[in-house]
Length: 445
Picture 1: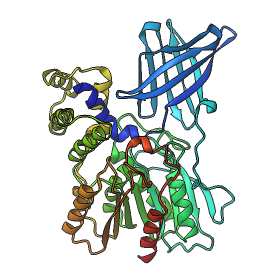
Picture 2 (picture 1 turned 90 degrees about the horizontal axis):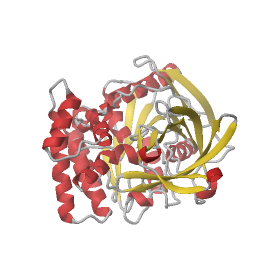
Picture 3 (picture 1 turned 135 degrees about the horizontal axis):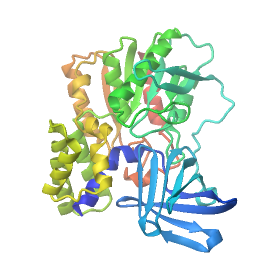
Picture 4 (picture 1 turned 90 degrees about the vertical axis):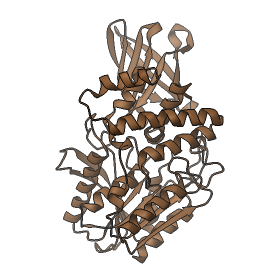
């Protein structure tokens, strides 16, 4: 029970903001001039995902498979009992990868089966033609040498001294629209802002859409250099009133960039962390378990286990991390399975768990708007808004506002409980109250 709960906890930030893979996916193997169609059906359970497979030509349906993982947009399905595996990279509606069985390897692209995906309503998603200009842009991050692609949206007759906002996605690899569950919150924000006179630049994360891949060791610090490159790109184009809007982890990255970029004039933090991240995750894990119906005894045991592991990661000073991690897990009564070890040794997670937003927020002097949903279990509103307020007060910041939206979740949807399960069920992508709050604040600067 302890290990199972720990895995949920460690996936909580990255998994919830990676693109969604649950559903049915189909593809064809080309074997000796013949085609063999296969379908994979991926569902969620307490451990993350479980899968079954159909092979219609062989008359096989719902074959249970072994483990299914989804980390850094890489889908891996293992079925040791059948001697097969599949590994591929998710890119929007397709997974491009390799099917292996019996020592042979075959390329196979999986496509989401639309007939098994329920029709969803997303009334706020912008539809062309637009009454503002959009431009596909790309540039190179001179620090990490990766290329980035995105969309620049500018109102008609836009003055380059008017506000323009660079949008920063949350955890996990996401496209420029921060798309998940068919919601496109950044596209909705960009559309709303453009109609009100605010320009935006939204970007594909590394390895998604038109942006080039990063490395397996990338951390939030690397992602911050992408946004710095975006600031320089807009500066070179003559824009002089540049702001940053970050959601979730993006709200952590925005102050990192602003502190070292005098070109950044204001910040909007949407559910950005204010408390030290290890403390934030302990509370997040507790609330997630509570929403899932866990009893208090298990919640407290889970919290104790996570605190011990987070403390090990934060304070580790040795040179043989993976070896020492395995020994630590064994001594702490954890089963050091490969999925768990891979999560804990991930460079992004090690950096993330040791991060304290106060390091940057306590030095920010430019205007800041920090907002949260009152039902947000991932970045709980009261604790994190209070921490942000304390940090900005410490910085002697003269122009900041913190605001909690009652009855809204981490995505700023008007919701009933704030639970993860509601994200895809709610038609609304982002509350108009939130859109108005952000745009009104920016235009008053």
